[in-house]
Amino acid sequence: MILEELIYKRFTESEKLADMLATFSGSPAVFSPAAPEDNQSGWRGKSQYPRLIYNYDLQANEERNSAGTLSVFVYCQNTQDAEEVTPEGIEPFVRDCLKDVLLKSTDGSIYAFAWARSDAFEMEEKRNDLIMGTEIRFDILEYASQETTDPDPIIATSRYIKEMYPDCVVLGVDVVAEITKASKEKPVIYCRLTNAELAEQTNTVVWLDGKISVHILCPDSGVRRKMAMAIVQSLSLSGEIILVDKSPMFIRRLQIDNKSDYLKDGQIFITGRYGLLRYKAKPYELNHATVNYS
Image (cartoon, rainbow, N blue to C red; front, side):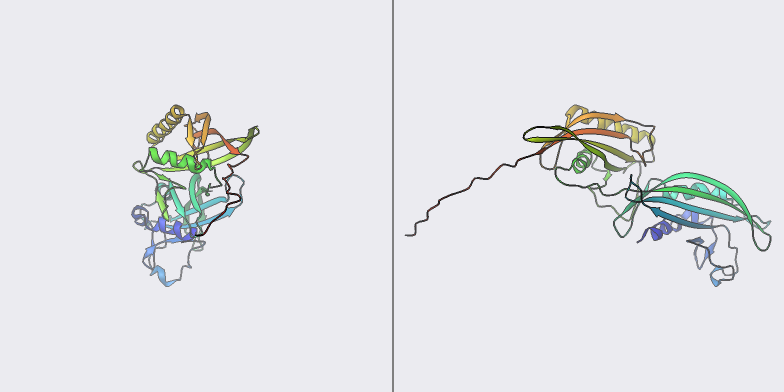
């Protein structure tokens, strides 16, 4: 599915949210980019409110391959016959549909959603009916693939954490479904390389310092803190991560920031030093061989 379809699926498959919305052609009143006209047969002459309309915009960003914004508009009609359903009452269920959720589109891109703000508004319809609404805005983050070339510090770090927490979903190691919901029992781990710089050169080895951010997606803040501390303590004791080519990446710096945004920035920050060999071992050659046939 494309991203628009995945967002629609999250909203319409939420029983709590669907129970609070009107219906159109037997489905919850969720639309993009606009709602059908009032005279459409899908309304079946029933109330057209509450309803939900969403739009998103993806744009280039240096920090992620692609980022953007998602705007979700909740509309309720303020009439005497309207049920006691308000935009403020629907808003938490909209946020919960996208909280700690990863959506994987058909092109392989993986997206997360960080709530930004919610703003109430009012508007009048043609029939002078008062419409109350709330605009809920999310920042869209793309968790792009971080795989590079050997020796790959991100793949090695992801595998290290996967060995510690085999029940977690680790991006780049595990196969991710179209919709992945992080939970207390199954957190989601994402490692990314923020930058790499030349640290030292010798005749045989070039040393690089790679800075890695580790994101732990989990709705339980206590679980996030415990996992972050356990990973840092394990790395501190081992002092290294073995890379794909079996060479070590030495841990130069470790930091935990539990106040940082775990969706945008991560909680664990690692600086590792790893080497690139200037020369590869030359295989033995068999020269001037003579073969005798009997």
